[in-house]
Length: 261
Ligand code: NAD
Image (tube, rainbow, N blue to C red; front, side):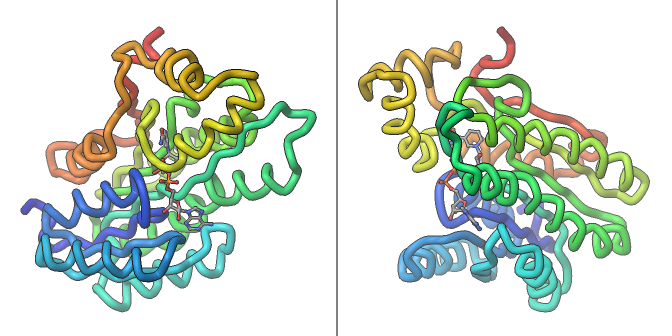
């Protein structure tokens, strides 16, 4: 229970990787703020499961990551409720797959807002408290697509490369305040985000479902296995440990070797 006195805010944690990260931090004793969309009864079930399984407190924030004022209010509510935000995980993200000439302008704006700008707004709100207390961990879920591109994902790849630059910048700003800032770059993790892009990729590339899974997704990953959400959760727990206090400004891959090639 290495995080017993800590509070973590994990954006986009009603599903997939974010939920696994929130559960992994709670398993180490952190109180958590979960955030994201979904059926309210499903979210409440997950929130109660975290509280009962790990004997921590879990708060749900419905803040929309396209709205800067709601992001700032989420951080403020967490600080009021728990006394601090010690760990911020910028994880909310969406995907859209289309050739650039057909890429809807509103999808571009939405992806930049959720996958990139929300991390800026959340860091902007959380950093002052971390600096005052002299301890903090900021981890953003980037992607292998923060290091390399794939066709038809212009907004996503641009946003994730932006997370890499934002991470380095804030890491330098807070380096002497006990606050580390890193991003993690998963390869393909089997979550609704990946499952939902299969039909779009079938259309964009003229492939079957099996061809998309084996020839597009796992093609990129030398291990030929999906990363699991739990493996990403364990990685975040390590970055929150004292052993990781000299790891900052880094973009750390967990991608089955994808970006080694
Ligand atoms: P997911 O679809 O399972 O979860 C996305 C989460 O973000 C959900 O909780 C959803 O409600 C939330 N969300 C979406 N729009 C939001 C908004 N406007 N405001 C607040 N919350 C919002 O997806 P996932 O695969 O778990 O992805 C999580 C993160 O991991 C994303 O940033 C994604 O880009 C990144 N990632 C995923 C993979 C993968 O293969 N699944 C690989 C690399 C990086």
